[in-house]
Image 1 (cartoon, rainbow, N blue to C red):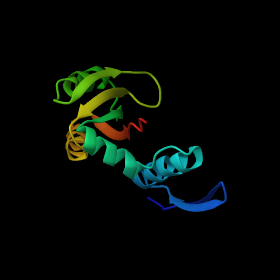
Image 2: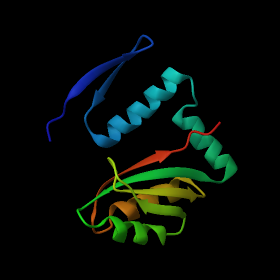
Image 3: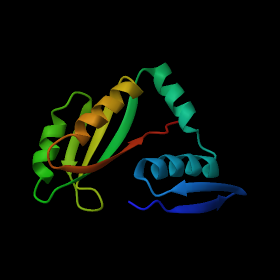
Image 4: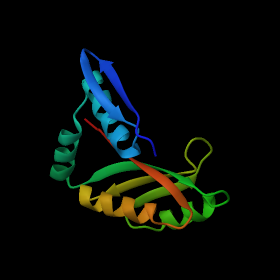
Length: 128
């Protein structure tokens, strides 16, 4: 895949981003938090560690016809509060609550490795 780079300017800060899903997602979250004055990702992780719970939403794209099967399988995983098929950019959405960022990473990997899953994006809550 060809790497594309673009400079984004927000509040006088120039940021270089690449078109790799993980890099762009991470950068956009940090940039959004910077612009809106919300917590940084690092402080969200610190709060999660202190409270002993990490909440997240996972957006999942699946192969055609796999919506309900993938949603049902994900719903059975420990830490998944709910998983359901949707219409839009994602095909399945899962609500997650786990005890740590490490557990979230493990669950995200498990979801990403499922047959029928094309790509997933994990959105960690930034609760105040």
